[in-house]
Amino acid sequence: MTLSPHRDTLAVVIRTYKAAVTTLCRRAGRDDFAWQRNYYEHIIRNEGELNRIRQYIIDNPSRWERDRNNPIRSR
Image (cartoon, rainbow, N blue to C red; front, top):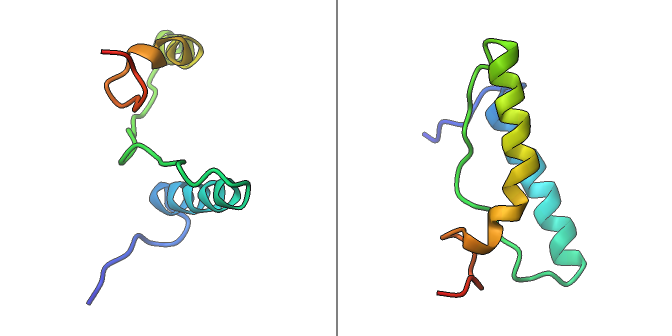
Protein backbone atom coordinates (compact mmCIF):
# COMPACT_ATOMS: atom_id res chain seq x y z
CA MET A 1 0.00 0.00 0.00
CA THR A 2 1.39 3.39 -1.01
CA LEU A 3 0.63 6.34 1.21
CA SER A 4 0.24 9.69 -0.51
CA PRO A 5 -0.45 13.09 1.03
CA HIS A 6 -4.05 14.04 1.64
CA ARG A 7 -5.78 16.29 -0.84
CA ASP A 8 -5.39 20.05 -0.38
CA THR A 9 -2.22 19.81 1.69
CA LEU A 10 0.92 21.82 1.11
CA ALA A 11 2.72 18.66 -0.05
CA VAL A 12 0.13 18.10 -2.79
CA VAL A 13 0.26 21.75 -3.89
CA ILE A 14 4.07 21.67 -4.11
CA ARG A 15 4.13 18.32 -5.94
CA THR A 16 1.52 19.52 -8.45
CA TYR A 17 3.34 22.82 -9.05
CA LYS A 18 6.69 21.09 -9.55
CA ALA A 19 5.16 18.59 -11.98
CA ALA A 20 3.50 21.35 -14.02
CA VAL A 21 6.67 23.48 -14.22
CA THR A 22 8.79 20.43 -15.10
CA THR A 23 6.38 19.54 -17.92
CA LEU A 24 6.52 23.09 -19.32
CA CYS A 25 10.33 23.11 -19.15
CA ARG A 26 10.59 19.79 -20.97
CA ARG A 27 8.20 20.98 -23.69
CA ALA A 28 10.36 24.10 -24.09
CA GLY A 29 13.41 21.91 -24.71
CA ARG A 30 14.94 22.40 -21.27
CA ASP A 31 15.72 18.72 -20.69
CA ASP A 32 18.42 19.74 -18.21
CA PHE A 33 15.89 21.33 -15.83
CA ALA A 34 15.75 19.78 -12.37
CA TRP A 35 14.39 20.73 -8.97
CA GLN A 36 16.41 20.66 -5.81
CA ARG A 37 15.12 17.87 -3.64
CA ASN A 38 12.41 18.61 -1.07
CA TYR A 39 11.29 21.98 0.27
CA TYR A 40 11.44 23.79 3.57
CA GLU A 41 8.16 24.30 5.40
CA HIS A 42 8.06 26.93 8.12
CA ILE A 43 5.33 28.82 10.00
CA ILE A 44 5.99 32.56 9.94
CA ARG A 45 5.20 33.84 13.42
CA ASN A 46 5.79 37.59 13.30
CA GLU A 47 6.51 40.60 11.09
CA GLY A 48 10.27 40.52 11.72
CA GLU A 49 10.51 36.91 10.63
CA LEU A 50 8.40 37.67 7.55
CA ASN A 51 10.74 40.52 6.61
CA ARG A 52 13.85 38.31 7.03
CA ILE A 53 12.29 35.66 4.77
CA ARG A 54 11.35 38.28 2.18
CA GLN A 55 14.94 39.57 2.16
CA TYR A 56 16.26 36.00 1.79
CA ILE A 57 14.04 35.52 -1.27
CA ILE A 58 15.25 38.81 -2.78
CA ASP A 59 18.95 38.07 -2.09
CA ASN A 60 18.99 34.37 -2.91
CA PRO A 61 19.38 34.54 -6.73
CA SER A 62 22.58 36.57 -6.39
CA ARG A 63 24.14 33.71 -4.38
CA TRP A 64 23.45 31.04 -7.06
CA GLU A 65 26.95 31.22 -8.55
CA ARG A 66 28.43 30.13 -5.21
CA ASP A 67 25.75 27.54 -4.39
CA ARG A 68 26.95 23.95 -4.01
CA ASN A 69 23.88 22.78 -5.94
CA ASN A 70 24.76 24.87 -8.99
CA PRO A 71 26.06 22.36 -11.54
CA ILE A 72 28.11 24.96 -13.44
CA ARG A 73 29.63 26.70 -10.44
CA SER A 74 33.34 27.36 -10.81
CA ARG A 75 35.42 25.60 -8.22
